Length: 214
Image 1: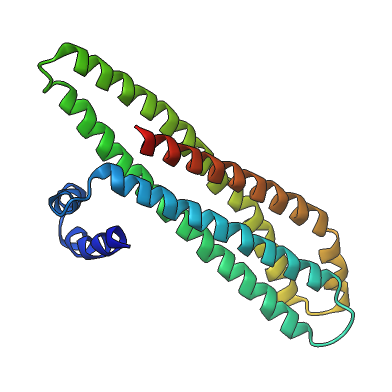
Image 2: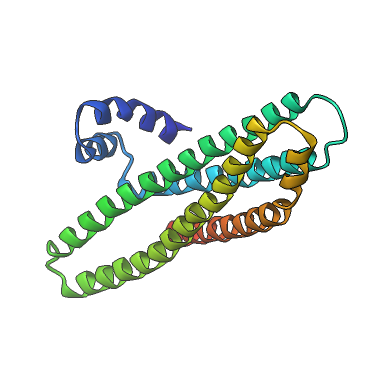
């Protein structure tokens, strides 16, 4: 909670300065790049958990549309459109949080690499360099998992958008019948997305656990 408040306050600095100033400001109040990295990974992880739920909701609404058996077609269109728009917002949040993880990780590793040259004790320097390379290796595996999950969102959004637009301009039983043919694709895409997100979430948990033990 304290770190989150500090990050909120430092956002003012970020708005008027560069990222290095932002991180320097946080370090002056006791929050180092490693702390910020952990916090941002946790935030990215939370957004992916939220993403899993949002895309499940969108799938359920799509299923409700294709199973439509009477009532207001305009209402079911609006509900599906709402789920699509919420999914877009969720995707944007996930991307922004992954970007923020990458930003602080780059700053942390650059600083770590620079400080290797400040050692006078060669054994300490070698140990620190080994630890840096191992941490980077694990981080790169995490970043690949997060970006893969992010990339998996687009096919779902594309399919949802196509079907939302089609339904918008064809509010009739024939449109519903056409959407039924798309249900299998939507099911597969959402299932794949949720699984990929779970892999990224698991990688996040493992990376944070390992980082805290160092």
